[in-house]
Image (cartoon, rainbow, N blue to C red; front, side, top):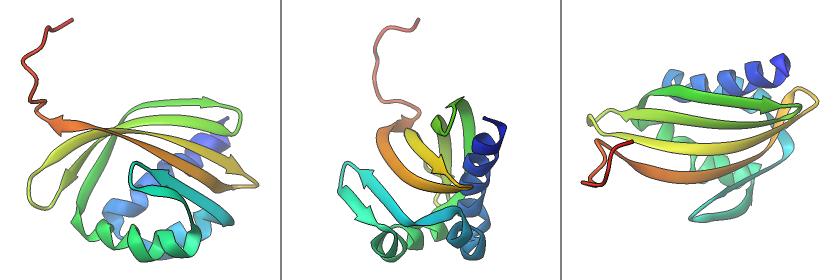
Length: 119
């Protein structure tokens, strides 16, 4: 489980560091990425469509990392160059020292716009 957590943490660090070399090593050749606007895109499409967004990120502050074997759920608060912040959760699957799959579940902007009840 420690190896999976290290891989996951390294992955998120590449975004703020704009570290293409490291993320290339972290994603498997059969990598798949799914989000609300991406349906199981391959590694090449991920680098074409998603990776250019790394230029916008200042940080991914991981607030929760739950690892079970090769699987991890990560909730983070991201900050962008223009001062925006948001929270997302991602499900990552690691195999053989690399990330094989990521599913992103979009959250909300911070501060949250809801005036709902606080727990």
